[in-house]
Image 1: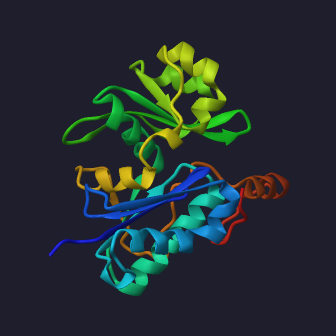
Image 2: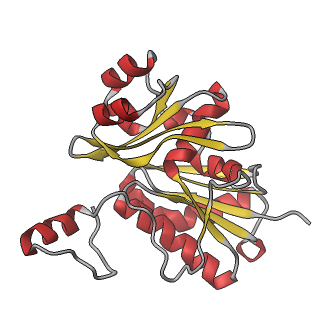
Length: 244
């Protein structure tokens, strides 16, 4: 009997949902615009499941995009994933959204170094560099928050391409670094489908042991939290934190 996994990615401005049996995808849908994630994610999940001939009661696992990424976007995707996993008592794993973006580019370019950049505002990016091998994901530069020039200096390898809205925002810098124009994620397979493709690879997914308390790797505090901490001179430790 085949298993049906649900993949959810809301870490950037382009959200996507996919279903299938990892590493394969049966159906996927995309939703553009970060302000639409909260109101559209449930409908997107339902539409994707119906398109793939599945249903919520038949889910056997969930993979959700991890950060770093949009604080609010990550919370939306994780809330949906955690709620479904807890209700149905099925496993949930997290994979960095940057890895999924690089995987989408690697599906076209092959096993070459690929930089994934998401726009983090404030002159920064959420970025990483990967090589997708047939049996593993090689991390050249681990996910983090960077000034573009800092990530370039930190990478021991020159990528063949860069993908993501951060790469497009800093297109001149990217083209000088990689020798080619940045790739638009919308022209590649949905990142949720890439999450499904990455699930079987060793060491890529982290198992969420307690969905009730688990949190994504945001990459940095939300802007409202940063302002609060600067004003009060101490860390904000409450579990509920305002969005970016």
